[in-house]
Length: 517
Image 1 (cartoon, rainbow, N blue to C red):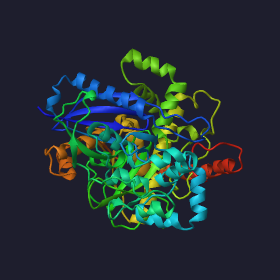
Image 2 (cartoon, helix red, strand yellow):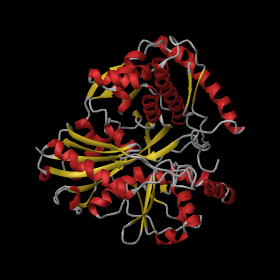
Image 3 (cartoon, rainbow, N blue to C red):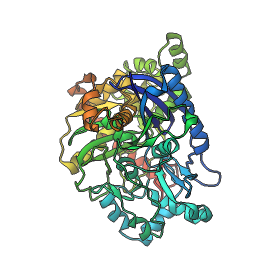
Image 4 (tube, rainbow, N blue to C red):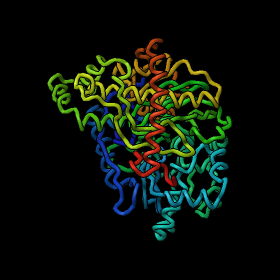
């Protein structure tokens, strides 16, 4: 038997996953990591390349140990990562500076660009589908303004998944799906638009080659990781887009929700489709050539759940340990007994996507009851599940409005899709049939598909997806619940607007605010 390795560098953790060439998961090794704020640099989120590479290597070696296989049988390795996070290198390919995805230190630079280059964000958005909020240009400008000596050494840029592949192969490159999230990119042409950098006074010669997903970069050159020198290193892509491929979402009009640390709602559209004029929704290159993806994002849904579990659910943790099941499974059992609407609890965390001017209210639960039978861990947990689905549904409606695609079926994957309750709530909230694949960790499978294309196992990503994606179960919406959730969603949006007013008045602190606002 031969194998494929996927390395998934996510927001909250990194993992190495081994698959056989039939798409069966053989082993996985995962370790959480954190991205710390730099002292004296508000809203920064640094990516520690030294520490995080050690963690990554540990996961690679552990996944091989768990699988008990000969490394010569690993045909190829590919990687995927949180998007927006960037790594800058010097002329020798040594890492100089790196930030994780929602690093927001460049607020002054975003303001500068908006005020001194009037209309340029809209112009760049029309080409790239990205705003300055999470883009690379303001961050690079921050480096130029605050660490000019370091900026002068910058010779190349890549995304974090590309960094993993560069560490393995010695080749710095990117692909459209990941590199496109820098905003220095053309959706239609699927390549860099270096002129964007020069127009705002930045280097325009730091952009590496662009390879399509599945192209071979070389063989493993870093022998310290424990892989064979015969293993091919293959270009991967962005976590959401590779996750979509891992879900079979490879045709125009296909829809998926990936329920991880963040939740992404994606709809496949032609690569030459026009982006919305109001910059309300993000548009990215897909890993499938000739397709892009309209994307809504729900901030921190998975991370909020982890916070809630760790902050409040020690009893459920103990019960889960006694029963040898996951803590979330215990919480879902209890939440399933809570009625639709969670007794009126209103969670305030991520807003629906407003990509051109995006910020969130202060994290909170509203409308709590002091009756412990009504307001407790189970009802609060369910309210968070409902809220993630409600925000997703609002984002999908925004995509429907500018694409004219009628959404009737959603593929759902990621950690959130493991439990039956959350899947049913998603179906009830959206009014759509929800399909769950057998491999719910689709991002890693998508990266394994890329590795398989590079190894010649599959002809294309579309063909790999057709061969490997198998469906596990599906959920049909309850029309009565759908009507209830429509009213709850409308109420939630009204309440959220009022919570934003408190942020605007300086009375509460935003959970996250795009740089420059």
